[in-house]
Length: 77
Ligand SMILES: [Zn+2]
Image (cartoon, rainbow, N blue to C red; front, side, top):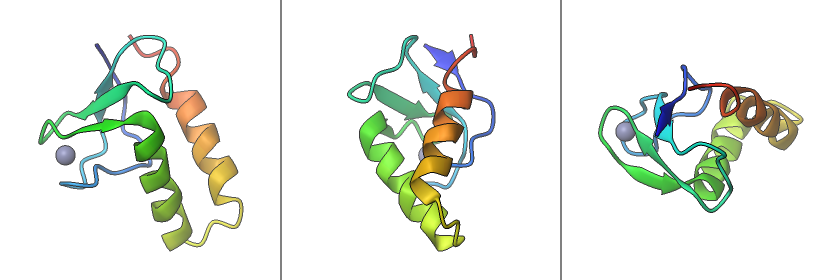
């Protein structure tokens, strides 16, 4: 498992924003909250991220979240 840095996306359980995830993360892989150990499938976490992005009124919410994930889940070892 590798670790993200602080993400823009918060754990749906506790609001923490660091997650552990397997290398070569795919949409159907599970990521784990570093704080409360809540596990969530990446695809579902993205959904959460979309909702959170909408809440802060980012017009291109989905594109933004995709960008965030591309940046954060690559290169962290
Ligand atoms: Zn959590």
